[in-house]
Length: 195
Image (cartoon, rainbow, N blue to C red; front, side, top):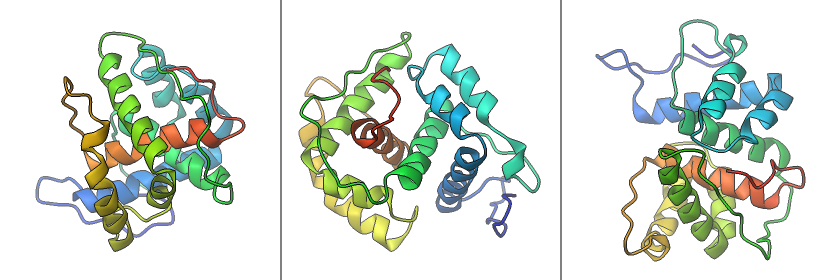
């Protein structure tokens, strides 16, 4: 399992339960950022969903952060977890601000159009309640504190969905999308507004 972490609970199918999986993903991403910081920053400059970024995210993954076994994440989940790790590493004491100009997202291919819609949605939430997004990014995955913040965010979700769109995502995806928007909006050295 992860270096420096007790084993997580694995179910009968050999998978982590969701709460453990999200915690493992956060711990792993923090370790990857610690050991491969510049490579992570370079990978995150690439537009989401593209083949180049999927390869780059695979390349930044490292066994240095594992005691044993293997981990597998989808590219969007790993991307979001890496952004959350960067937020926690670089922006813990940065004041919560909303830039005057919103981020602009572009799709690298047909699949990425859905990712752009999700990032646009996350940006709407961030611009409405930046303090709540900040609080969410600094809570432990699956904790009572996270559930409380998500409970305050949930009523805002509908206002950020275009009437013609239907979006579906897990908690991990939502947190990752919010982490990306937050980081790219606030960090002075954030990856350029690509993707």
